[in-house]
Image (cartoon, rainbow, N blue to C red):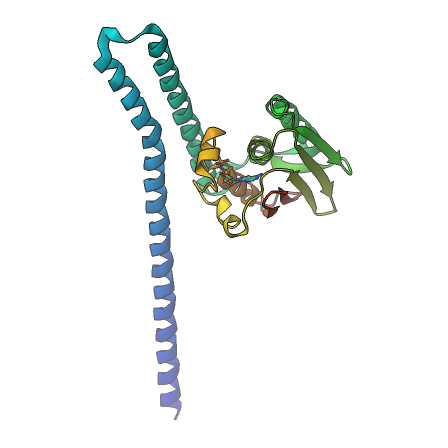
Length: 261
Ligand code: ADP
């Protein structure tokens, strides 16, 4: 009897090892699939401005000396705009890649989150003013936390900038800061177009855009929220969103006050 039970235990062990192995293989395949999808998305995104530039330049070459000065200038401006866009995509990509390098060597210092948010909002004010959007900051208490100032600032900037980009003229954005003994909380609420429920999970994916045309018009790359999510998780924090189409969107962030590796 003893022999049988040893045999049975061995069999079960082998089976569970095989199961684990299959699980790991499955996970590796998923990783490989998402890596391939990322590379194909990157190529596509980088190719789009390149194709426009080529068409514009080709058409100038074909028309030779016949091109009226006005048209020539217009085409050149379009080419420069495409180069600018290419640069935005590349710099967003570089940010993402740097964040991806696990634990991304965070430069942790103790920072006043109130001041950090005030600086970000001051920087974004001219953008908001262009469309008469009101930027409101509400803080329930002074908060200092151990964070990577540059990276968190990038993540928060993306959220507030989105609040402006996807808002309506004369709208508002309300940034609220609060804390308890363990975490600080930042809420970024806007009076914008909102995000349909079936897209809400995907907006954090790389290159995902609800409305491609609108996002492109506003200079969007579809990488902003992926960067923000990455920054927040490097700080062991959490990000969530609540949104209703036509009413607005609220992002909430929860980040530990003390950084623990
Ligand atoms: P993008 O560079 O296109 O802004 P993001 O990753 O920042 O990319 O956002 C992904 C998509 O989520 C956007 O294209 C937009 O459709 C949607 N989105 C993000 N923030 C908001 C917001 N505050 N209000 C409405 N839609 C938003």
